[in-house]
Length: 82
Image (tube, rainbow, N blue to C red; front, top):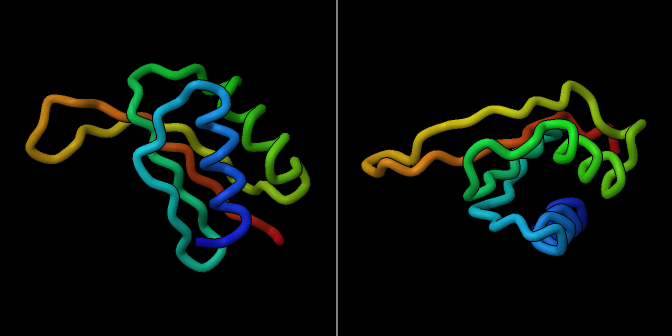
């Protein structure tokens, strides 16, 4: 796991979010939180503080269902410029 993904996982967990997974694909970072309806502004702030606002491009907050379950999770994704 890269330094960025480790930092993001730790920061989200420090802010009382249960993290399902953190992954990267080239310069795209994806953080799946096991929570429904998290506030997008707060998630954006956590990412900007952790990675640096100038390193974050196209931050997106969405929800998705977990396959085969009734659970919904919140997904934060963005391009990392570093």
